[in-house]
Length: 338
Image (cartoon, rainbow, N blue to C red; front, side, top):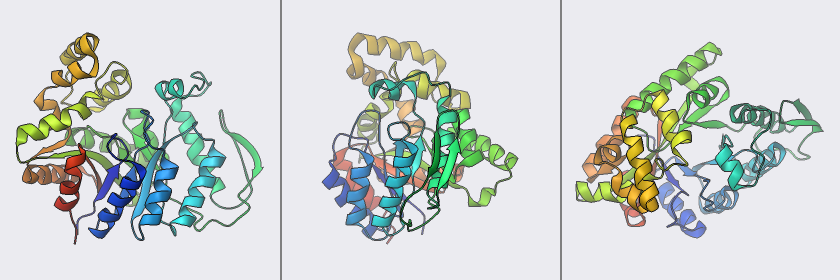
């Protein structure tokens, strides 16, 4: 059976109870992972969602993004070990870099004397020490503690930590220290191929075993009987990566890695559209080629073929995320593994 995961948390159309119920259905259909995205848009928080999913399932491996600095590394390690205990050893985590945009939303300092990537690296290194269950010390540019340890024995002393990455810096960091990578949504298979070359080069330079490296990717899926309707249902998701706030942090890094579907000459068009009428006008300005190129959108057969293209690009574990509430059940059924 092909490995597949189901991803939720980004859209406004699912609450925590619904998320847990849908993940239970994913487990019943043979999905391997249930992945939750904790986002800058302040949707549901990851800890509550993961606890609910964990109690609703028995075998599903659980994963989530968690932005560092919103919680300290000691609390993140404590929470991760507690969730791993609750779920019987089914947790993974993808700690994500805290960008200036995240910092502003959460009223955090934007200047630290360390880059977001450096802070993320220190979080991952220090959390790995804390999860051993021993008293440990760590001293970095941002993370510093002495003789700290969990006063109870974690279910596992090694929990996989993946790096969610988009930029060249993040991709290299994933290869250097991550147990795997979670590649961003709204990226083409061509971007994926370029990104994996960067990751593998960094991993091999660090003397790591590439065969043990997990490659997961969030893949936005829109399933309709009409190809055009599927594109229209997905267009809002693509637009969220192209607004003036996200352009420098998402679109720009993707282009530098090698995302062929984002064209430099289109950026002024998107900026003008947003200035004219916000997201409503920007959504209408997104070309079909962007949606077709960077998502899996179309008829059921088209979506299945597109997901297979991501596998061919090197994705081991596609994390499929529905574009709209009414598509959720259809997506779950389309990739049933039983």
